[in-house]
Length: 83
Image (cartoon, rainbow, N blue to C red; front, side, top):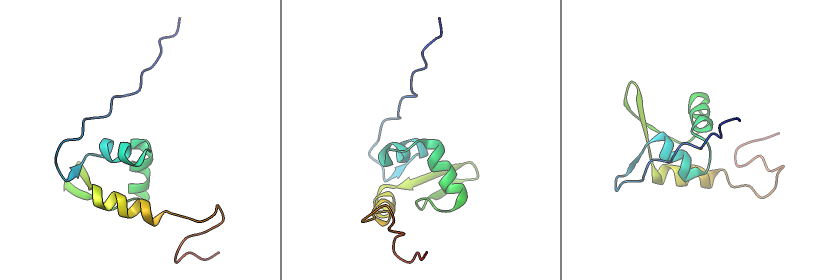
């Protein structure tokens, strides 16, 4: 019988302005892998490089980025984007 894989638990949010990538992904309701890919491509939310191997996000930056992704229809390219 195959063993069922359980999802990784989301780390608890602590009272700090800095969110880990896992916390930021949970806040945006996307996977940490999607957030990492968008960070690598440069089209994701702003982040802080805490050390060579650590990044963090500010909740206000996540909220502003999410708001900038708002569209009125599926064909709306968004502000500043032309077809």
